[in-house]
Image (cartoon, rainbow, N blue to C red):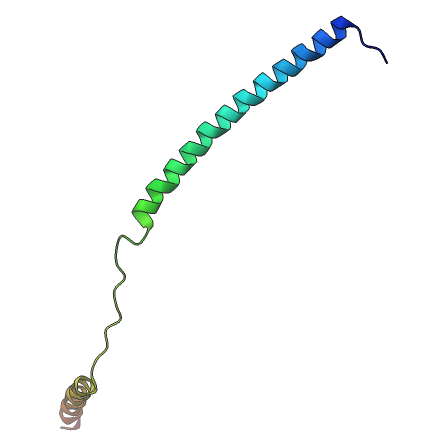
Length: 84
């Protein structure tokens, strides 16, 4: 196949148009990507553990004994009222 000079010029013009369109698409995608990156950065700042989690508190054995004794005393009081 032998192409004429006009065919080559037309193909080059089409190729040039395609390249130009691809560059426009690339620029559009880059703008969208930068917007997405900005949104991610904003959400990361808000939700990325800025509030420290509360450490689970532990109670000593002596504290548990005091609480248990107080609860037994409350139940004894209720039973004493119920019995009379």
